[in-house]
Length: 138
Image (tube, rainbow, N blue to C red; front, side, top):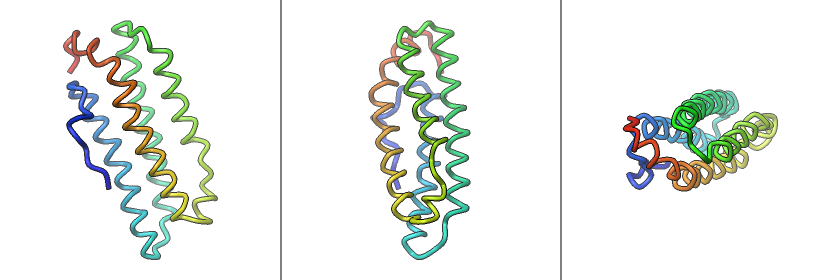
């Protein structure tokens, strides 16, 4: 399980809340991994969490990208490319591989998502923080 740390907060409540929800979804997958290590078949649940992750990620990215357009964020194209790549990576997941080795593939996906999310927040997202805060985006 991962914990939300204040060091990852942008100070923009709407976006921080959305990031926390992404952490919650990732933590659901982490809980499933624990179950898999205890011998529980988690395939159906992992498929559901991956679908939830995809839907919420798309929602969150659209929210950010609308703000980029509204406030003329100069690096929006680069940022959107990062978003598009993650969505593509999620869409291209081979769920049959999860069924073959649930522990390995769930663990690999968790590592990837945790690394991506916190690198993206502390890197790319922090670049737009001052712009949006300057417009009092909440």
